[in-house]
Amino acid sequence: QPRMNADLRRINATFDVLDRGVALDISLGSSRVLDEESNASVRVEAELSAFMQRRGLTISEFKLRRGDSFIIASGNLKGDTEALRFDDISLDTRTSLHLESMRNWFVKSFPKQEKFPILKGRADAEVKIRGTADTDISADFKASTRQFMFDKFFVDSLVTAGTYAAGTV
Image (cartoon, rainbow, N blue to C red):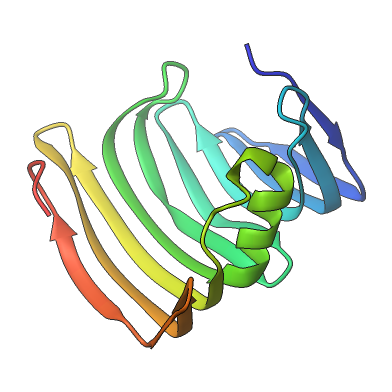
């Protein structure tokens, strides 16, 4: 069973209990999370603004940031929040990664991966996830790179887009 250790800094949290549910606003300043088994650590900042009800969760804003890399998400999850079973999902995400920084963190945190190829540039992605009790989950995605370098190959710009539905991309 994994064991994590966290050094949390500047936590600001507001929980408003209302007749209809619970409003959450949580902000976490620059904090370090450590996996005790691998000794891998990462310093992150996080923010969450959400509204929880018995039959669903509305995420107004979720941000997770490491340096100048980030993921942002917002959307609705409707269903049984206690069982974490959602009949209706509508979630939008946006990600931007500074590849050299992420690669350096990965190799430093997992020394056995020191031969992981050199990465440089940025990678950006947008994903829109949808699903209901009557339909399989589907996702529309767009991804691109800027000044992308993989090992010794300078590719510069890659762009792709697509849809995942019924197990097929």
